[in-house]
Length: 254
Image 1 (cartoon, helix red, strand yellow):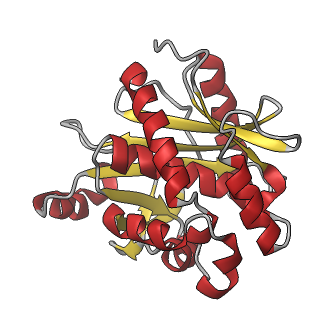
Image 2 (cartoon, one colour; image 1 turned 45 degrees about the vertical axis):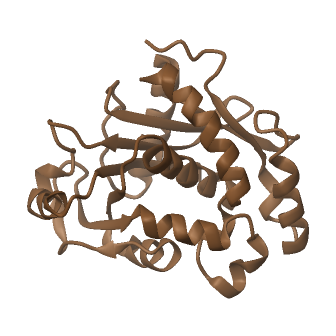
Image 3 (spheres, rainbow, N blue to C red; image 1 turned 135 degrees about the horizontal axis):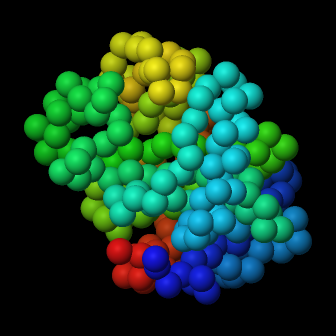
């Protein structure tokens, strides 16, 4: 168990900051940076999952979202090589994303993509896997999605020094990950019997992701012209503040 009961909230952020016109949105995000853990009304929080109740809550969310698409899912387990993030509104789980870090036991992706992953390892890539990503269907804010991805990226890249993300997605989601985040396709389509659906392995070098965040992070007014998801990420200044906060939290988490 980790002593995070009082410290596991990472940020608070307005839900509607990214639904106003673009100039107002940019101003709202900069103002939000001044109070990470105290969102305004109609805001949300992102925190580290540290209790059994949290794990059960997000397992239920993942099951609901996966089953609505015809996928199977398994409950979230407590794993020292895995970090789990939870987005909440009024203490209700509305989003989640887990990061599994490569170890001697490998990644859960190895059961289907070991050839591709071993090839990356031989190049010196330090791998991590983004998994169990789900957002409540009633939550339309891009801020929730962007916050989960960016915090996971900071933890993997800035805190734990992993430099390559792998994800397994349904083929119909390839276009989003390629166009909006810059992922590359690493495999052919395969049948994943665990989720009972076809899947494809995607990957991205976190040095590339960091360069895009440096260029576009915290600038939602550029989303239309840039046509990627990076303008909805935190600004470099906000990322720096988050990195200091997450580094302190990591000392309690590991």
